[in-house]
Length: 129
Image (cartoon, rainbow, N blue to C red):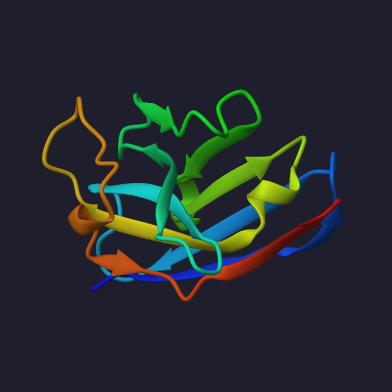
């Protein structure tokens, strides 16, 4: 079983940057596709970015494309996925969750939260105007 723990959230002014990390622990890791989701108060959880286990596919929500970058480090047992967030906007304010599922295809990364069966506890990101 893989366990996910996020870190790196905080309060920043609009235009600033933040980097989130998600550390995975457990017996298996390399065959998991990973993603970041976020949920703002009163809103549904939404897909932000995803990366497949062989790092050949990175996908983004339109709202963050060009500002956010997802990456992962499978080497040296780091087992960590990152989300670099630049040019932050107040609309980016949300709890950010890391999620994972066992990859079903090397050419596809899911956007639906229903596909993901492993979740972290979330980290708060607040962007002030």
